[in-house]
Amino acid sequence: MNMSKVIFGFFVLLALTLNFGFFLGEIDNPDHHNVYELFAALVVGLIATIMKLGERSQMSAMLLASSLVVDLQLLAAVSVWVLSVHVFDIGLTPGVMASVVSLSGGALLANLLSVVLLTMETAGLSR
Image 1 (cartoon, rainbow, N blue to C red):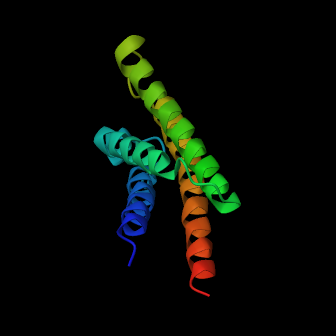
Image 2: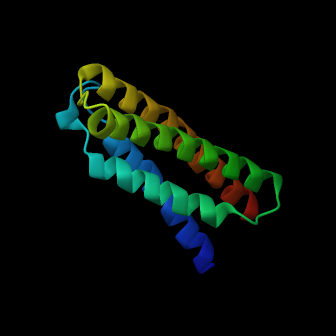
C-alpha cells in the first residue's frame, strides 16, 4: 500500500466532508453554518491542492484544476463572510449567508468531481 496515496485520498475526502457539513442546512440561516467548519474546509482544501502539485498526468491536471476551483470558491465564501461581518459591519443577514453557502455549494461540486476523478484513477490503476 502506498502511504502517500492514502494520505492524499484522506485529505481529498476530508475536504469533501467538511465542505458538505458546512453546506448542509437552511441556506440563509447562520445558525446552520459554522464559521470554523468553513475555515477547516478551506485549510484542508489548500492542503489537498498542495499535495496535487508536481503530478504530471492528464488526470492529475484535472484533479489540480478542480482543487483550484474549490480553493477559489471557498476563499470567496470566506471573503464575503469576513467583509460583511468585520469590515462593513453588515452582519450575517440572510442574503449574505445565502451568498456564502452558495459559494460553498460550488466548491462542493468541485470536491465531488475530485473524488470521482480520484476514484476513476484508482480503478484504472488496479487493472
